[in-house]
Image 1 (cartoon, rainbow, N blue to C red):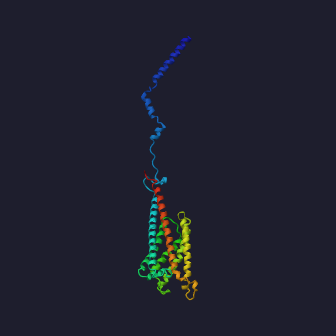
Image 2: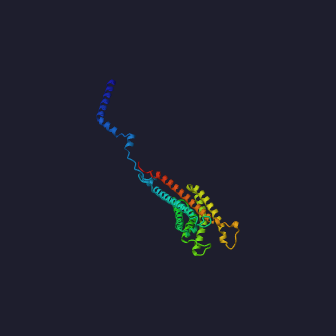
Image 3: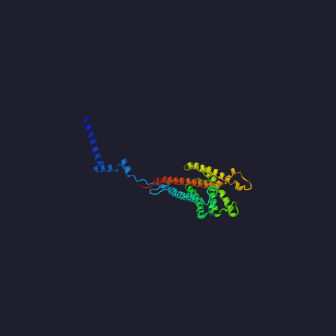
Length: 309
């Protein structure tokens, strides 16, 4: 009885297993291949990912491909303008130096360069045109250099600009209102010329001091500021010396001792003052050209940041 019962149970279990095998779905080779195809590896996910959309220049802070930042283009344009103004200033100043040297040498026999003021060139034949043109040219060169420095955002300061304005206006007034051809001032034109000429000996040194102070605080111009200050000191010494030379003319009622009468060198003092002023302006123009070129070269790599290869 026990053996027969065990056999019956085994046969029933076998029959149930067969029924379950028939009911289970048959897994074919195609189904296995489809399952493998739907399974995605990490490398496939990276390969199939959608390309990232480039961030707009306004959000990324970088210039768009193929385009330069507006600020960079503006910096290059301002540097170019400043460089051109510097070249113009250098050319005009060199031309003025040559013209004044030619006057001193060519007309030395007609106007003593040591004792006679340079204003009297207006009474020398073939010299008045050169003299007047030189004064106007120096005035224009001064304004040109200051304008070029402003293009590079150089902080000039109101005092320096004001004194340079007085210098430029004084040069023009000396041309418009000529000196009187006499030992003393006799006409309105002569008085205006005297005051305008005197303002040159005051305005230029003060402009140099004011400009040197401002340039000393700016890295590109600190060394030039020290040089400008030395020129300002030099012109101050010349101006005070010239004032001492003119005392016998201003106090003509008092007879000066011969040892204190230096009027014979008054023309030399004037010419020295004018020469030092031209050299100082030339130093500013050369430095302006150097800084403008440096800024323009520095702006080129910044412009190429967003350009495509």
